[in-house]
Image (cartoon, rainbow, N blue to C red; front, side, top):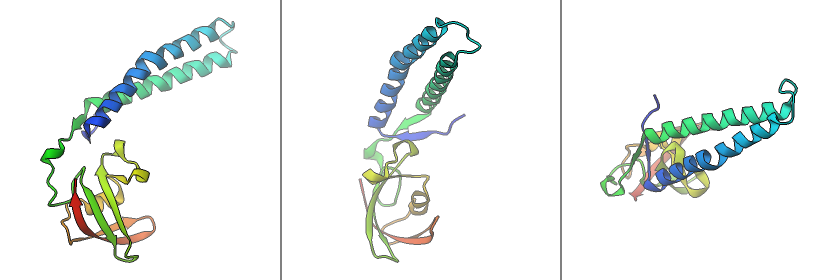
Length: 157
């Protein structure tokens, strides 16, 4: 049983499209590859057949995982998000107290995390450290490089 995963409506649509592509395009292609490899003769020494069967198995596992994620996905409604404290989907401006550098992150589900886009997972060390904090509060974040202190400057959507 997978845990409930909170996603935006855009991510839910992307997940549905990806599943449809895997079922409608990749699955038939995998079947064709197996059929073509099977036509080439002896299956005991047919590496192409083994590779095609393995690729099909991996695809089926990805389909099953995505179906599970979709079954447990809950869409977040931005209009119900409380910006008085850090929560999922809020944008948080933080100051690293050691370097005095300011950063802004949006807290998202693991599925949506993209550091380049400034989206960090709610289950990441920083995400966990700042969750529930209010502006002015300091979060102690245990990172691989050691303890980092962030002050929450502001929270928005």
